[in-house]
Every structure is written in structure tokens, then in C-alpha cells.
Length: 497
Image (cartoon, rainbow, N blue to C red):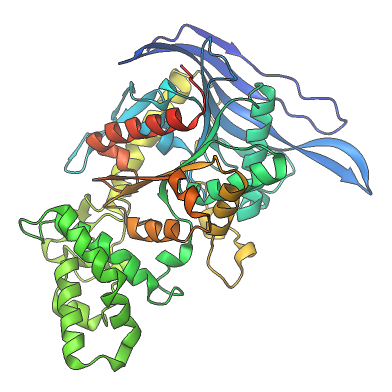
């Protein structure tokens, strides 16, 4: 990849009589060799000012700077902006920077870290990504406030951004500002979110369309979670236990508990049992006969890879944190939550659950190192302040006041966005070994979208033999990149380069 030019795009803020901040964007120009030819593109990376109009006693007082939000935007040189799609991408947490999608699958450069069972040693590596979505769409990666290099402005409180609605509003304003400044209102527009980023994307789609009139072409929802009750073992009743069973079965298959059976066969059996007989057995409680209970214990144990004794003592209810520590306890290992293909040494052979997620341990170092090298040495960002892959204490103090006494639920918001805009298409990506947002729970949410039957043609599903960040598995990364590019091509309504 060639870096041919750098310039500082900082622009003075408008004079409003309020304390000012300037955008801090560095421009670099590059080329990327792909199977479809060489792409010449421009990168702009740094921080932009998040503005808010200020009114006092019904009198407009100008705008005030509320935050500096880190973005990296990639635009194809020479493209017609009315034809060229643009995709706004972010990760989840809440409290995670966009480094994962940026350096894992979407951006023009990617992490080289190995995979489960064959991890590279520090300091890892970075390489061109010829499968980048940049082949078909411009890209804007957004780090919400308190993640990455995004910070509140002087005098502003970080916690004011750490909540469901506040987060959607701030990200929406960054999208609006960028689209307006770059003259992209007539570009096909997509949102790409992962994990809580899919929760954000569902709410953001409704907000952009309903509040700003910015209609979208599509959403790319990777490892989606639209109804938090599907993963709530404490307050979700027995539902979460059924939602997780197919994931447990896939994980047991991965670690050799299902003999010569195929993954598809094992998952299909678990899905069928989780849809009917398992919820019935859980709902019956003490009303199960001894024979019914014995049958249920044996079936759950066989599917999950756990012992019948453990399943019986757990009263047929397998909580996920305990499962990660229990499945391979006899081998002295714990199983990954984000990606159950990964294993790590157990801190204690008698601990109730694992002390740390071995899949997160495996990927955090490579992504943090690769991105910070890339940011400073290839994108030319000069600020050496700390980069927060995860904002400190953000997830612990995130406000869900909009859902007080109820689980977080955005199925209705996504449904409304699709009913409002019948051209809005949604691509769902699932990892068989994702224990954070398991595929069966996500499928259940999709099945409950409140949309006309005809709009279900706007939904598509892709599955990968990997986990939450399925792109850390090289065959899945290549397949997913092709799937995402195909979706954007088909749904852009344009013949973009």
C-alpha cells in the first residue's frame, strides 16, 4: 500500500461566541491492490467536533462543542458521490471502539494474528486487505465518546453520552455532519454494527429516518442482539437457557463431544429440542415425572457435552458463564465466550466459572497493537494520547433508563424503520461459536420483527464456522467479506465502482 501524500485538514469552527474546538483530520492517500484492480483512495483520520445547538429561554445562542469524536473515513478517488455508497461502521460493548470491524474485515488494512490453536506471537502484524468493503463502498469508522480517542469537550460530562438514547443521538449527529459536509445526501447509505453496535444500529436507523429524514439502503448486523432477554439468565426466566442450547451443542461438537456427526446435524437437533421439548421441560418444573426428567437430563447432557450429574444438579438450566468453565474442566481448560473455539488454562480447577475469556485474551493484544501502529505510522495521526479499545467503566455505568424494569428491546425500532422505508434491507451475520450473542437468540429476534410478510424478502442470513468476531477465522473472513460486498452491491440501487 502506497502512502503518497499527507495534509492537515483541520478547519476552523464557526464563530458563535462559545468556546471553540477545531476538527483535527489528517489526510493521507493510498492504493490497494484487489482482484478487481487497484483502488486509489483517500483516508482522513483524526477527530471531528460534535456540535449541539444551544437555546436559552427560547433564544438561539449558537452552537456549542460537546465532544471530539474520532473517525477514520476512506473515500475512493474520482468516484461520483451520488453513485458511490458509504458505510458507517462501529462496534459495540457498549464502550468499545470500532477497531474490530476496522482492522478485522472492513478496512483496507487488517490484523495478522493467527487463529485458535495457532496464534502469532507479539508484536503481531498488519497487512493489506484486498477483500476490504472499500471495493464497493466508502467507509466511515466511528468511535463513540469515551472509546478510542473520542473525548467529551472541556466542561462536558462523559456520562452524558453513556446511555441508550444519548449514544444514538450523538452517533446520528456525527453521521449527519459528515454526510452534509461531504455532500453525500444522495449517496446510498449503510450502517454496519457488531454486537451492541447492532442494538445501536437498529435505534439509529429509526432515528436517522424518522428525525432527520435520512433514509438508508441497508444495515449490516454482525453478531446481533436486538432483545436482551434472550441472553438474560437471571431475569429472562427460562428463555435464555433454550436460546443458548444450540450454541452449547455447537461448542461441544467443536471440542469433540459429538463423534463423527456433522456440525449441521448437531445444531439442527439442538434447535429442534430447544424449540419444543426443552422449554416444556423447563416450564413444568417439579411437575415433570421422574421418567420425563431423566430423559431431559440425558438429552441436555448429550447435546451440551456436560455430565448428566452436572445437568441434574443444575436443574436442567445451564448458565453460560458456568458452561465455559465446566465443559473442559477435566482438561484444565476454559472455553471462550466470544469464540468458543478458543481455550485457555483454568485459573482454578474448582472455580464456579472461568476467570477470564481466553478468546478476548487472544485478540485484544494483536488488534490494539496493529491499530495504534497503523493510526500513527500510516494514517499520520500525531496525537499520542491513550487509545481506549474499551472505554474505562463505560459498560458498567451505561444507562438503560429508557427500559427501566424491562429488558433492552429494539425489535420494535428496527421494525418501524423497515415499515417506514420498504427498501431498507438487513444482512444478519452469525457465528456458530458465538457465546456472547448466540445465533439462536438472534434468529428468534428476527422471527419477531413486526413487518409485513413481503418485507421479509429484505432480510438475509449468513453463518460462519467461527465466533463473535467471525473474521478472526481466515476462511470465515474471506467468505464474510464477499457476502458483505455482495449485499452492498445488490442493495445500493446504484452501479457504483
